Image (cartoon, rainbow over all chains, first blue to last red; front, side, top):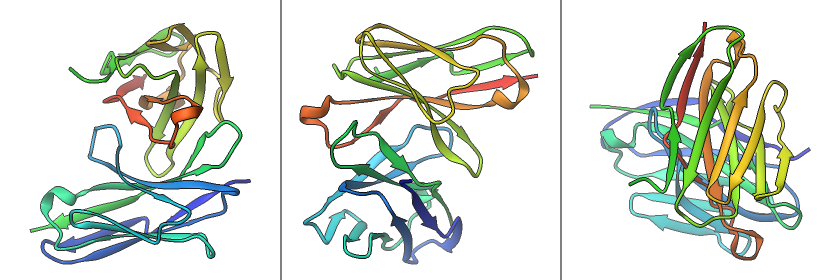
Length: 113
Length: 115
């Protein structure tokens, strides 16, 4: 069964600090991995997409990494801001078939001033 | 205007009542989805549709039904609501398989409370 596991479940950091969120998956064959940001009470929005050949991709202060051999991804947030407080969801899509993505349960990040 | 619009945004109802949540999109996508979100459980797929005449069950379809009235409209019904269907419901769309990178575009959510 395809699974996506995220850690930690929740994280509290001070404004200006860096943090790293982890995602492990068993989805195979692999098509791509996305990180979504979900603000409280809003729908998730895609931050970045990682394909098989990509190791690192940045989107502003967000940097995602992918190790397709170990089936792990991370999302690093640099110089956190209060607006980074949100849930971050890792979503992996299987290659072929119906392209229905598999969701992780998310990491809830709280940034304190 | 939002690309994916859900109505109502909030609804409180009583056990046994019939409820319909509606979703419309202007993205021109063929694929539409209904998800349910509960604290600690993440987003779970209820139903999805790849075309107007295509309906597929997701992992938690029991107690729900859907209707794809047009390419742009996908509604979710609870025939007889029960309290454990209290949750935040999201509609989402994605492109068809030819142009699909897996990105989902979500609505703003419909919060349903069943008393």
